[in-house]
Image (tube, rainbow, N blue to C red; front, side, top):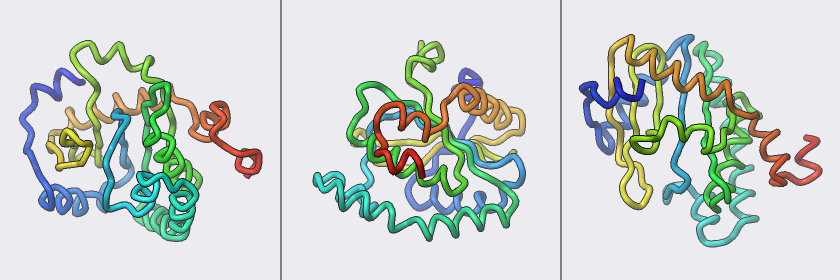
Length: 203
């Protein structure tokens, strides 16, 4: 799949053009759903208030801001169900965990609790696919398109390369699904790694 993706013609979409394209397509995904592979270990998210608090070292405030999103995310996943599709995400993690990963795992755990299915896989499990370079950040939307996400040197998302074609998109989705099948539930992973309090483990 990765060789096919590298050789496929794609359309580079940057900034607002990417986000408008993504948003327009997202809500008509249908039953195949949304699948995402996340590989990088550091990102910059200056438009995210919780990330800003975390980046300033204010961990309690960062967590409180994440928790304040619970109702909005509950409504988001209810809207997805009304549109008859779900989201699935496999998150690659490297040891030792970066501070960013510790923050992002908290957000992903909440998403998982509310319906955004998330699993975690160790970077060592994906290295056989990385002989020619690190796996891309990859999204598939239904049967229509796949996006290879683009980031600058600071970890800020710039946009994505959009690929079409049923066979190519299905191949990308199958690859992500395969990694997801090998992954571990995010709650189980975080409990095993000591990232949850006793109260959180029994929530």
